[in-house]
Image (cartoon, rainbow, N blue to C red):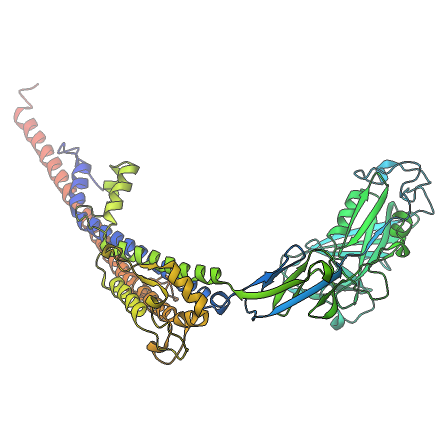
Length: 607
């Protein structure tokens, strides 16, 4: 039991707090040491992040032939034929003397208006419009497009990776079944073996089991809708399909089931969003629907590009395969050879060409060639220099940063006495100079400099052995700390004269450091520096646990000291309380004895 000054009249609580504040001063110093280590670790990791970005930039930039040996296409008439060069294109020349025709897509339009005596409202559901019996879309037209029946809907969320599932209340012999996974339709088949299924197909078995052509993932949402003709049913549906063809002429049939509670716009949207590869729209002025293939060119030689099946298309939208306007391939003559392509944009001999309009040789033959893309090569090298300079700026900034020894990290007690802005200003100075003259950073920067200036003794036949030979030198201002600058005219001239030699100056490889290109050396030095910093500060190369790197172990040690000290502080505080409690008890006993003695001595006279 703690006594808090009733006998002595002292504020024991405050006295213990004051004593413990003095006792806790070493803990405060440990907290400051911990904060300093954490800040230093963060600053090292910031440098490492910059190094990793630089290392990646080198690999994706000056070490890639697609950047450093890039070609660009030239064309004598980009209005007729435009061209771009692939990254690995070789020098080539093409002469397109004529383009007889451009590639076009197949189209088909309703053969007659699709409304009856009452015009369809494309935004309202079919059922809500109460269309007269002379409309193929009328639900009261026995000869219309609708089948009357039942509908069963079921949504299943996949609980684990699997390729099959079972419909809980599957209809026997359904007229039509629609299966969607995350909104994408699967083609329902009943006459295939599971091993023969395509990735976009699903096998419906008699017992209601669905077997998919690919694995379903956990969380996938499977929507199954089945329809069955039944005179007693209340659902009006119409099943239909569109068959189109891929680049190789293989047919692909896309099935649809439309219902009377959909609007015409919703039906058009469903068609456009499907994998049928067609685009459809309804024109209210003509009261007709237009279909166009999304792909140009002839895909089904000798036949229709779009084939419509089902009353919805043939009787409802009045689509007829015979009304199709045929697709055509682009036909042109290149280097004396007349040939065709399914599209107007295609690759030929390492060039990507786009035909824009027809023309004859008498109008203007188009000559297409390639030349070195000096602009891209220059920009790639400039980015290397800029990235290097940013890295050097950052490293030198840390190495030269001023140290403010009068600004140690704030303790919690000190932070409570300052405003947010005061804390921010204080900590800015407290974090300054933590890596000043750091040997690890300094050695890394020096390695970069030596790798940049050493000549490259590659086997390439070139005069370019050092950066200075292509116009890249160190700035004259020593305050820049070794940053690079470019003589743009000299660099462009070097690229024009020997792009391969410039590339090898950066990217050459070999058994010795002297054989390796400058970018390869610098990248290896960056890799070494990243590894050394991560050994000290962690955060990369799998070093995520404190025990795996130097500063982390230092943090663990400080935290262990703090934990041990906290235990000792508890013991000290208990000792103080015991001492003060004992004092209070002693004073209390003394007071009691004094009162008793006083009573004995003067008690009689006081009556």
